[in-house]
Each structure stands twice: as structure tokens, then as C-alpha cells.
Image 1 (tube, rainbow, N blue to C red):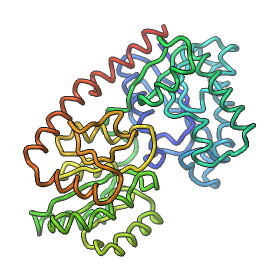
Image 2 (image 1 turned 60 degrees about the horizontal axis):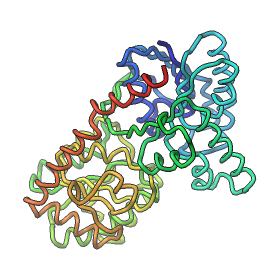
Image 3 (image 1 turned 30 degrees about the horizontal axis):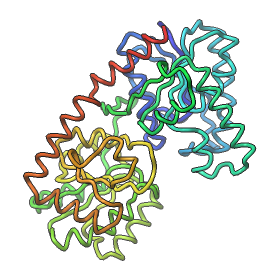
Length: 394
């Protein structure tokens, strides 16, 4: 079976965080499906058997595509549609697997080319318009809402990635048997086609610190440094942590230069600058390396409803996790598998201190977390769920 996957985002570029598309495509190919993947020109090619990556022109002079809606994306999507039509004319695809707003293009082309449509919904596009303040007009938002709802009803199968989105979609569609919840819960290493990721000089500081002071207790955050991630909560909590645990060292991996500078200043104002190491954006293999050295992993997110991708890797890691007690986390986490705390500095500090000091509680939570991952979110479970989608749509 040959299918067309359409993803209007940079693939593969960690800055666009398209890991979910990568894993969806990887596991589909492992099930013997031949895939043409249509995407933007920006990004690095990856090695996935049975997958042919097809790109529109790069238009590098227009800059990089950022997360969320943008006029640049609208411009690039014109070329996605043109290339999509060209591919549909030349190939007899039985299925089109559309990620995010690609479903809009597929919705209008479906009656013409008679393919079956999988809508891979990572978020509500209507919510994106308002969350990123891209559109404020009630008329425009209303049009997108009607279009999104029509796409959900027209799709032959719908995939959502977290319980909140799953419940939202179920409230809109009558045929719930076509709807599948597949969490972004696997985290294989991404294999790039050209070149190897290089090391980063910032991490030499971590290596030297841990070599010279092996008793340091490393607390690790990895992810973007966007406001909703709660990095301010984490940094503001650290004076309380080092007061009781002087050997604590915080490693923050991720963020652009402007964001890193902002949070460095916050660390300095809290007088913990020498206790926090910032790396900026680094390759995935280095993130994994330093996660494994952690005594505690943290997810201080302050808002949102979609479950962070990193949570699944964190609960599978065998390392205690401290996370904020918000709906974004509690769709997966509870106090049996993690240290859930209120999203404010003192409470977050207390969670870290408990995770460092209370050995019995830590071991119990870690064991429960690993069991939860194996039963509900493991690679085997993920693969089985995706197989069910293709079996249903045949």
C-alpha cells in the first residue's frame, strides 16, 4: 500500500519539534507501508525505510518557519497544495495522511481524487489562531471553526494525541469508532541522512563540573523556553532548593539566545547563577545523554492542555520526575508516578527536595512510572494503535 503523508512544517528540524510526525511515519513504514512525505523545504532529511521525502522550494531568503500560524506558512502552503495536486495526479494513493492544517487541503481534494483521509490532529487549529494571536476577528475564527469541524466529519479516520483533544473531538463527531487516541509516547533516536550532530561547547562545563565534583546532584530540564513552560517557576524555586541541598546543580537544555539571556538574568537576580547551566538548543543525542545523568527530571509547565512529549520519556527513564499539578500533566501523571506540586516556586522546590532526599518514595514512584509506561504508552502499544487505524480505514 502506498500513501501520501502531508505535513506543512519543517521536517526534520528540532526547532519545529516535528517528532510526532517522524514517529508516526517511522512506525507506519515498519508496518510495510510505502510513503511519500510532502513537506516544507526547510529541515534535514532523515533515514526511514520505505519513505520518500518530497520538498517544496526552500525560500531561505524569507527566513525560518516558526512554531504556530504565520504569513510565511500561508505562503508556503500554496506550494504545498500545488505539489500535492501534482502528486495526486501522478500516483494512485489509497490514503492521504494529513497532519494539522494539511487536512484543509485534503478536505477539498478528497472528492476529486477519491482517497481515504486520515486527519492527524495535534491541536485545534482554531485554538492556535487565538493562542498565537494570529487572528482576532470573530468572523475569521468562525470560518476556521466550521472548516475544522467539517474536516473532522469528512475524515475517514481521526487521530488525536491527548485525552483533552480526544474529548473535544468526540463532542463534535457522531461516528466515534473512527477516532483513535495515540499519544506521542515514543522517543527513538532520529537518524539524520547527512552528517552527524556535533557536540556543544556549553556542555564542557557540565562534564568538568561532574568530574571535579562527582557529588553534585543534577536536576535537568529539557525543552523549549517558551513562557508556558514555567521556566520562571523553576528558576525562582532554585534558591529554596540550594538552601537545603547545596550540591544541587540545575541544567536547562533548550531555548534561543534571547530566551537564554532572559533566564540567565533571572538566575542572577535570584543569586543562583553559578548553580544553573544553560546550553541553548542542542542535538537530541546530547539531551538524552544528560537526562540519563540526572538525579531528578523536571517539567515546570504553567499552562496548556496538550501533554508534553517529554513526559513519556521521563516516566520511562527510571529517574524521579517533578511536575506541576496542571491538566497538561495530569492527563498522564498522578502522585503515584511523579512528584506533583503546585505551579509556584516554593512548592516546586519542595518537590525537588523530596525527590532528592526521600529514597523510599522516589523508588516507589519510579517503579510505578515505568510500569505505567510499559502498559499504556510503550512502543509496542503505540505500534498496535497505529496498526488499528490502517486496518480500520482499509
